[in-house]
Structures are given as C-alpha cells and as structure tokens.
Image (cartoon, rainbow, N blue to C red; front, side):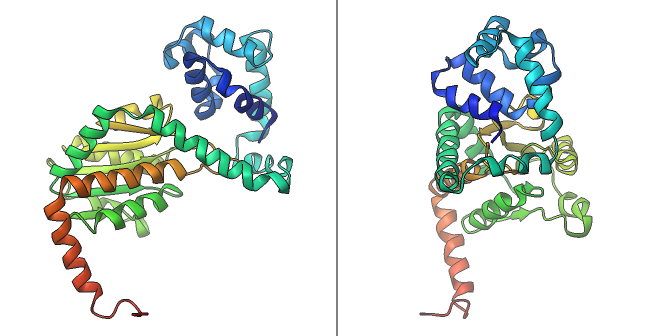
Amino acid sequence: MSGFLTNLNQHFDSFTHSQKLTANYLTDHMTEFAFSTLEGLSEKINVSTTTIIRFSRVLGYKGFSEMQRDIQAELKQKESLPGRLADMPSISDNHLLSESFENDMKNIRKTLEVQNDADLKKAIEIISSANNIYVLGMRSSFAVAHYMASQLGEIKKHVNLIQSIGMIYPEEIVGAGEDDVCIAYLFPRYSKVAATMISWLREHGARVVLITSMNYGAVSSYGDVILPCAISSVTYKNSFAAPLCLTNYLIAALAKQNYDEAKEVLSRTESILAQGYYLGI
C-alpha cells in the first residue's frame, strides 16, 4: 500500500463523518481528486470546502493544494495495474495475511454501515416481482455475478447470467423489457461494455439494481437502486469480500420473501441433481 493510502487508513477512525465521506471518495476517485478544483470536489462529495481543507491538515499537509500535489505525484506511478502491483513489496510477508484479512473486515463493516434500509427493501421488491432476472458483471466482477446467478437460480425462476462469451451479449439481453430486472455489479475501472448494456436495458424498461463502489457519483444514473460497497484492497485488484457479503444477504432475503417459490425451485433443482450428480459419499 502506498504511503499516502497508508497514512489515510491510519487516520480513518479519527475522521469526522464528513471527513470519512471525503476519504471514501478519495479512495474510489483518486484521479478525479488529484485534478479537480476544491469547489468542484466539495460539490461532488457534498461536503464543505472547509471540511476538505481540514481533512488535508489532519493528514499532515499545510492545505488542500499541497495534498493534491502529493496525490498527483503518486498517480504518475499508480494509474496502471502494474503501478498498483508495485505497492505490494512494501508489505512484509509477516503482515500480509493480517493486513489482507483486516482490510476485508474493514470493507465489510463500512459496507454494512452505509446500507439504506429503504433501498434494500426496494431492491428485494424489484427482484422478487420481476418476470426475468438478468445478472451482469464484467471481468473481475463476473465472479460475483456468477455466484449471484448460481445461488439465485436455486430459488427463483428465469435467472439469466449474462456471460458475453464470444461477444454475443446483444442476443443475451435482446428479449429484456418492462417487468424485468438487471442485477449489475459495476466497479472501477468501470467496464464500458457493461455500462452500454445497462443503459440499453433501462431504455427498454428493465430496472437495474446496481451494486457498485462507495462513491458512485460517476455511475449513479445507471441504477434505479444503488447498493454501495467498500472494495479497497492491499493488492492490485479490488476486493470483493464486501460485495459477496451483500450478495449473500440479498439471496437470503429473497428466499425469505419468496418462500413458496424458493421451496418449489429448490425441490426441482434437487430432483435434477439426484440423477447422479454427486458422488454419494
């Protein structure tokens, strides 16, 4: 982890609520933070300019401009995945295991803290009432999308994982429309293909439950319901521990909401698997 981000994490628990919002925004939008004006950032984060200035001073800078120059210098080395990988040697082997686990636990706690009950309820209602459910995630996010689709497919009918193998995604979503829903996993660096598909689905009446990063201003227009997750990591890729936890909650809540259907689909699934799928030991 870079010196700047290490300093940020070390001070995080001492920040005020507004300063934590600033820290979370900075973590997810480091490039934007490095080149935006103080006033522009204040508007995007929805905090005062004074909060951002005080935030920089808590981190040991004389003011916002000095902190921004430091972030700009660091970004020259960190914009690519190889640049992010370069941080790893700074973590000793003795601490890598504990730092990795502690980072994921912090992500899970942050994600739990920012969930909005009304948004969670709305997401469950939208998914429960949908005729067809499409699950979307590109590149690393595909792993979480696959998990959601496989679990949800055991308790709900008409669950479709968008796999985009051989770039056939138009055919995978062409039948979607009103009364359908897309559960989309969209995290930085945002996939243009995923964003294009989400936009098309919404234009044709499908609603979107968007599971994304903590500061989602850049992609807020893509979701009817937005469920934010913390995804910071000690390595060169995003951590999906928190999105997986949120996915597990949604599956459990949907099973409870649709108990009769879940029982029927599970029974039918088990009858198929009973045809010799397992070893039986």
